[in-house]
Length: 161
Image (tube, rainbow, N blue to C red):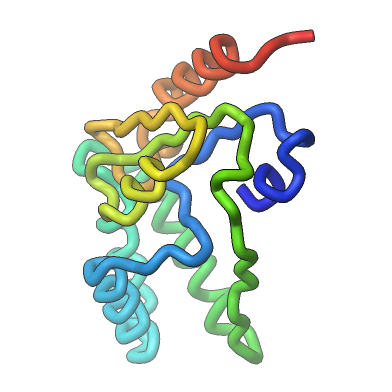
């Protein structure tokens, strides 16, 4: 989004899946999730923190393959974070959404936190598609369905040549 806002002529299309947005004020639900995650990690319960995130980020129909993939990725991410000698604050640039000119496919999951649906709905030039079956990681839950949506969007909204 930052590149599309800063240099709109360089971006011909965007696809955003359950995207965050710098400057978004987190909901109470998202803040509570962060507090629960932090408490588990501070207590040394990496398994508990990992399972919290698996249950949070995936929709109810996600299969065990998707759950195991998220489990492995999240555990690895926690291990790296905990091994870091110092904490790093993310760099967040101001983004002027009105400057974005590129067509956008903005996917959100009906079982994701409301924050991500709200962000998708705010994006200019966006075809917002809320996936009734998805959590935060639709491309892991139903890869072929997400691929079909992406290909359809690109064929319809992005000129060739």
